[in-house]
Structures are given as C-alpha cells and as structure tokens.
Amino acid sequence: MTKWEQTKHKLVSQQEAETIISSWKDNKEKVVFTNGCFDILHRGHVTYLAKAASLGTYLVVGVNADESVRRLNKAPERPINDQDSRAIIIASLQVVDLVVIFDEDTPKELIEHIKPSILVKGADYDSTVTDENDPKYIVGSKEIKALGGEVQTIALEEGYSTTGIIEKLR
Image (cartoon, rainbow, N blue to C red; front, side, top):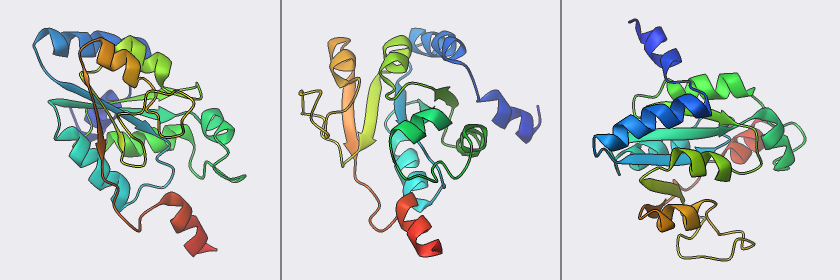
C-alpha cells in the first residue's frame, strides 16, 4: 500500500470506526479520542495531537463537518478549508490512526458509539466540570467516565491558533 493509500485508509465513517476500535479494544489497546475543527493546521494542533497520541495505543480524531463549524460561529468566513481537506490533512499526520468527520454540533454521539478508552481536550476545558452547560465541560466525559474510561486535558501551545493566523493574514 502506498503512503497516499495509507493516508486515505485512515478516513472512515462512524460505523467503520466502531468496528475497528472494537477490535483494538478487544486486544486491550488504549484508544484515545479527541476532536476539533482543525481549520488551518498549525504547530499548536500538531503538538496537541502528538501529546494526545502519547496517552494510548491509537489516536482517533473527530473532525467537525463544514456545517458544524459554521454553527459554532467561529467567524463568518470559517471554515477556511472544507471538511474533506481538513480530514485528509489530519489523516496525513503519523500520530493519527483514524479520522471521522461528524455533522453534529458536538462529538457526543460519535463518542457514545466508539467508546474510546481516553477522551482528550485542550486545557481550555476542565475534566472535573460536570455541568454540561459550563463552557469548560468536556462533551462525552460523563459517558466515558461511566464506562470506566479516562478524561484528560493537554496544555495548549501558547501563541498558536487558527484565529491568530487569520488575523495575521489580514
């Protein structure tokens, strides 16, 4: 299989992800999940994903679909890159094992289906917050903890953000 085929092979549907992840977990592998828009890939994203991957055996990344990004009100021009472009860029990273595009506003449904061992978000969230209305609440954390899984945060790389890049370009 060529490198290009290997990269494309990482792009899977939710149903395909469930099957693959189930087999990994049957082998007692730790599956890490995180999600984001990943609109313009930058050092902060790469550092974050590499640290997340280091927490387990496999890293699965949920990428917000275009309409989902628009509903998040990031900015009128967002996303800059379409969902297929963002997903293939994330899939091209060596630390990433699977990429799933999700249409919902949050990855809750995806998390409930794939049941990762470890749920990870940036440190702008708080793994101890239980109020689902709190902006620091990690979506899916209640469900993962109920399954005996872990919820962790990773420090963000200061000075790196897609919004900052867009502002700099202006």
